[in-house]
Image (cartoon, rainbow, N blue to C red; front, side, top):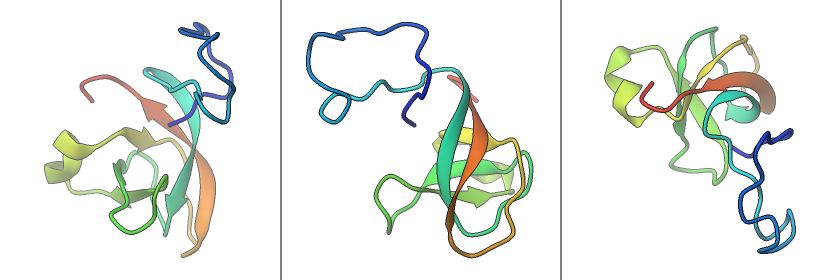
Length: 89
């Protein structure tokens, strides 16, 4: 997940935002999600769409999760939601 307001900009001289975006390691981040999701669903990288997550409520997906949804989404399109990123969810 790409940070929209990074607190620490490591290697900021390495390139531009297009070539070296700031990656979120912890906190709340806007996240692209395909399909519907509920609040607190696990977000896992989509195997079909690069740079987009899909939501699962089953805890068996927790080891693969990149974050958890902090809001619900009902449509079957790709949309932006707020997610929580934590190391070791």
